[in-house]
Amino acid sequence: EAYDAGEHDSFMHKELLEQPACAEAVLRGRLDERFGTGHLGGLNLDARELRAIRRVKILGCGSAYYVGQMGASLIEELARIPADAEAASEFRYRNPIVEPDTLYVAVSQSGETIDTLLAVQEIQRKGGRVIGLVNVVGSAIARQVDGGIYLHSGPEVAVASTKALTNMFLAFGMLAVQLGRVRDLSIADGKRLIAGLTRIPEQIDQVLATEADLALVAKRLAEAESLFFIGRVRGFPVAREGAQKFKEITYRHAEAYQTSELKHGPLALISPEVPTVAIVPDDELVERNVAALHEIAARGGPLVVITHESVDLGDLEGIVAGRIDVPRNERELDPILLTIPLQVLAYHAALELGHDIDKPRNLAKSVTVE
Ligand code: AGP
Image (cartoon, rainbow, N blue to C red; front, side, top):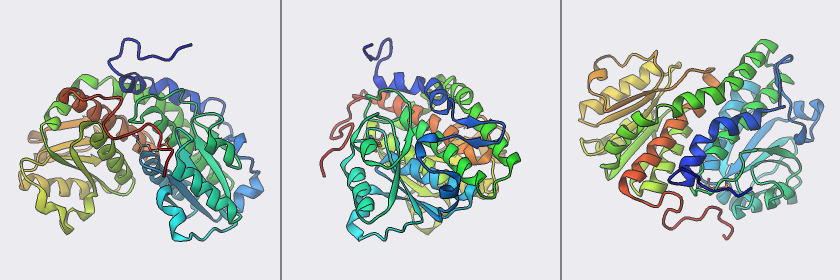
């Protein structure tokens, strides 16, 4: 059956709205509610091999790299295995150390990104084992890896990736729980997280239902030439992905920063002309995050806050240019629900500016040349 944008003005809009159904597809048949674990057969790794993993290294480009950072946090928090993400485009040029007890994870929607493919080949040449989180079945990376998880997002046409990224996060969620459950993650925590993953499709739908409100906020953001996206720890890759999506299709200068680093430099740029989109989940850092918002407000910087209903912004409540509350899930899984409004903001800002949303200038859907 032909895949077209139907009643939507763009594939990006169609793909944004497909996310609840796509999220269900990646989770289907892969959650073990009884034992509170993931059931990822395609990894080709048994419990003994999973237990032997001492480190996880995630590789991807662009947004896949940012979701990889979210995945690394999930794996460290839930499985207590040191994990980090790196831009695949840099990896092979720094003569990387490849260790046999490291699990390498290549993340790619298209499965054709040359930098990611060459990183996989470099690891394998040095004797490492790579699994793939890939959307396109039978793609070059899917064929090259030693096992993996298909994302089941269906075709993604818009250059700005949305539904595939969401499913990358969910695949990392399942992988982290599965790695955790062969180690120290308790059955109670495993069940808590599996139940959290199950709630996500419906919660994405709730975020998407606020599209009209998000469109109003986006209109204001579209006026700015330059913006900051800030977050910390779990929220920082969310900010990076938010800035990436915004710059890709609005052509505005959008810079992601750790909220904690603002005072070490970028605060000098805050002014009434430079809005900040702040990721402020209701977590252990909420008070510090709100304190940073005061610093920005004191310098006249307009604020858009992506947060939870339970967060009290105090005096800031009356002055924020926009407050977007997303549904609560388990803290570890919050990043994906905080990311969805950023996709919608970028889409509506680009629409406001009259850009070609699906085919932004200078960019290709998959980058197959070095
Ligand atoms: C995402 O919106 C971008 N178009 C881009 O960063 C993309 O994620 C990157 O090029 C990686 O593509 P892949 O997932 O197909 O490997």
